[in-house]
Amino acid sequence: MTFSLDPKKVKKISTKYRKIVTDIPVPESIKIIQEIFKYESRSMHGQLPIVWNKAQDFTVSDYWGNQWIDFSSTIFVSNAGHGNQKIIDKINNTISKPLLHTYTYASKERSSYLKFLIENTPKNFEKAYLVSAGTEATEAAFKLMRLHGTKQGKRKNGIICIKGNWHGRTTGAQLMSDNENQRSWIGFDDKNIHHIRFPYPWLEGTTNPKKFLLDELESLKNKNEIDFKKDICGVMLETFQGWAGLFYPNEYIEAMAQFAKDNNLLVTFDEMQAGFGRTGKLFGYMHYNIVPDLICCGKGTTSSLPLSIVLGSKKIMDLPEIGSMSSTHSANPLSCVAGEENLKTIIEDGLIENSHKLGLFMHQELNKIKNKYSKYIKYVFGKGLIAGILFYDNEEPLSHLCSKICEIAMQNGLILVHTGRESIKVGPPLSISYEALKEGLQVLDEAIAESLND
Image (tube, rainbow, N blue to C red; front, side, top):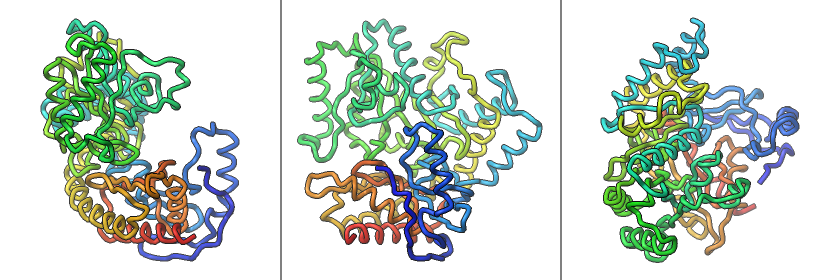
């Protein structure tokens, strides 16, 4: 859906956290948005028509006096809060040296961040690979799994992936993702990348998650004549289904980990949305009773500048030869200082605990909303400060209704995550206050009611 650029008279709002003082979209903002449309590829468009001027903590302001509570965290980036002053100070200190770029040459900033990162993440993660974008990280993990398979003497280096998961927009990442339309541009499928079904609760057989997985694997084995020990080198899992905030059943993941161990496969978690406190734990995979071989992190890594990470053991991370895996902007000093301060802030300022505590409240309130509109809201998924609300009329996905709710919420001072399908995502900065979270959830409730009555 493309949101309307016709300004609409809306009610004026003035609370501690929200201000709406103009028509929405703001008439003066239309020229800016249209210039972007004129000069930028349309693939980048489709978001709510707000021209951002400032973003501080958990609010976003435009140039014309409007202010929104942000339930998007710029799509789960600003975990430590927008414009976190500690992060800004570290970036400013580095800029003023000046030191803006180092390629892969050594810097104190890079050394300090790597040391702090490894010392403050689980001990099985001994080394890191730093890149710029999430899709670079999942591509790197893809390569590491296949390098490991080659070293182990695997014949085909197959990767098992999950239908409905999403891993990025580059070739390898999209081949591992399940959306056939979005990867059709590639012109081929990798016959050694295999997809099995996600255990959606509405599918037959998922009341026994372990059996569901084993049946899927058996079907895959028979259909493709696969010897798992010889033909498969790894498993790629999005920590939760990104579009829905839906976690796997624990029994499913435990069975997958045992299957991987039995067949000498690496287990990789794509933690782009789930990492750095978002789910009420440092990493989302910690909700499962397993230890992955690799994790890919991005989005909330710095709460600001581009930085993504692959974390793993020395044995796996040192498989590539010197110089064979690098990135021009890898370990950029500005991103490194932002990443270190972000992780310090998340740990030392209790943001993981805040995500857990406020997450319990948020999900409690979202389930009340679900019960209130039970004819249209079928599921609420997620953990911590991440949630997916799924809208259906009987079995019919209500993507248009979701878009309408996002638009009305915007008109009333709340930014929601517009997925373009039958879900609305909610993910405020982990620094949000109880009062602001409560107010935003009330606006969401009212936006649903207005959308249904429109």
